[in-house]
Image (cartoon, rainbow, N blue to C red; front, side, top):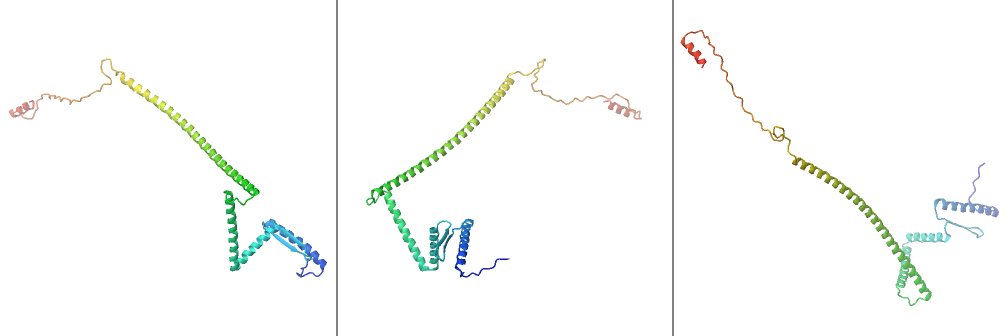
Length: 249
């Protein structure tokens, strides 16, 4: 059987009302705590019972929550009311002027000015403050110097490594140059020896390296006289005899 709905109205029975209050109060405080943890919310809960007893829960501090609430509430009201907004900025300006005046007085005291109205304890506090400030300045300066020295050492190590590598490269190049010089000298010596040796000759006195010149001449035409033969031309007269004699030249 399901649970019936409860009418939301004042409970007439005081005993039932007190029991309901205790149960609902504990549940409300539990839910507020869960909300602040799960949602990372700043929660402040204030409950007054019918007997004027106070029950509260604050995730951080009830005072800070109330101050924050009042500030936001005031800002909201100022946005809604232009006159209130002017008053708000006037109060902010007055507060900033007071802060500025206080800072200027502190600065003058730190510079050693306007110290006539200070007592022994105030002067002692000012001296301690100056010593702490000076100590902090010196520590910061020493830290900067230490960092710069460390950086310079690192740069020096890098330059030293580069010098070592360059020295190795220079030695390698010197070795290569020495080897090339030896090869060049050996070739020069072989060339001089070849130039100083006499050329090869054959036993008959001819030089093998001497240039040979060839001269071509035209062949002589040999004339062979054909055998004298009497040609018979079918004629026996003197003219034919003369022709034969002419043929034999």
